[in-house]
Structures are given as C-alpha cells and as structure tokens.
Image 1 (cartoon, one colour):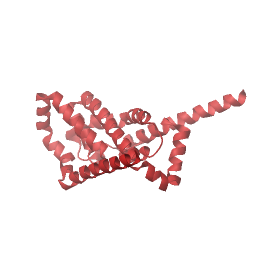
Image 2: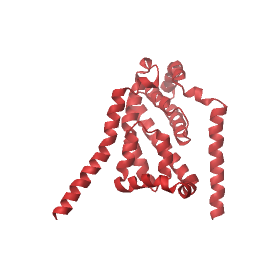
Image 3: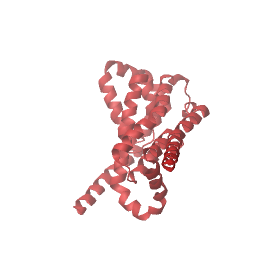
Image 4: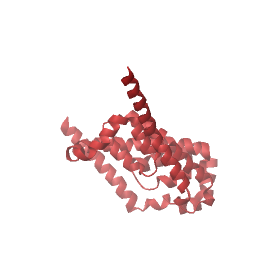
Length: 233
C-alpha cells in the first residue's frame, strides 16, 4: 500500500512538473497578459455571444488549471471574466473556478508534500497549526480576505496543515468573494485599466485588510465574552 502511494505521488508530481514546464517553455503566459486581453476583448466577446455555454466551460477549466498548478495569470483571468462575461456570470464563474482550483492545489500539496515537510519543518509549521487550532476557520478566512498574502501560497501552506478539505474550500470561497468581485467589476471597465495596480488601489487594499481583520477580531471578542461568562458562573 505504501509503495502504491509512493508511485502515485511520483506520477502526480511528474505530471504537475510537466504541466508547469510546458506552460513556461511554450510561453503560454503571454496569453494571460493584460495587453493580450485588451487586444482580444472584441473577438472574445463575439465568441461568447455566439457560444456562451462552451465559452464559460472553457474559461472555467482554464481558470481551474491555472489555480491548481499555481501558474501566473489568475488576476488577468479574473479581469477577463468581467470583461467578456459581464459582472454576474463572470463573478459566479470565477468564484467557483478559483475555489475549485485552490482546493486542487491544496489537496496536491497535502498528498505530495505534507508528510515530508512536516517531518522536516514541524517547528516552522507549529505557529500556523496553533493559529488554526485556536481560531479555526476564522484564521483561514482572514488570510483569504487580506490581499497581502498570495493566494497560491495560502493554498500550498494550508495543504500542509490538518484543516479539513471541506472547511478549506468553503471558507476560501467565502473569503475570496470581495477580491473576486472587485477584479471582475474592474474587468467590466477594462478600457480604463492600464495595469493591475489600477485595480489594487490603496483604498481597496486598506478596505480588504480591515475586512480581513474582522474575523479574527470577532473571534477574539467572542472568546473574551465566553471567558467572562464562564468566570461569572
């Protein structure tokens, strides 16, 4: 059984490496640039109008693959969702595609690396494990809401912890809603965007940081009130 698991790890690992290598070798990232999106917006919108269902499916699968393999381009894809599908369809599609892709990255990191990493870096992972044990899903929710932490890093790190997959998925999707909505809406105004910095304005970052702190602050307040209640009893 252990041997079969080891072989499975090798096969999945080699497949992931091959996919990532192909992405960079064939320079597929050029298709996921803001410049390319702006130049192709008209033709993409025409294709969507003619084949909406197929276009949504292809876009969904591409987004899942980019998120699952932690490839660059997710931000531009999120803008593309708004630019070619509109706010509602773009938001719903991106929300589920990004969450499913994140879950696959999470499961991949857990299956491939958790045992080895925990043996070697148990001390470094201890604070994260402690934070999850103490604040549970609120900790993950805060990480998702604050845009200072790259989402692919959160996916991989969480895969090395003991957090349940369903909790990771649910709170990841919830926590990514504000940022996803902001980028998809920005995509509907694509002509006004010259760089990704135009989307992540200081005001938006500040708002998301404050929003990201709310789950932990709420959790701390609940713990404080519960402590006071227990002390009174």
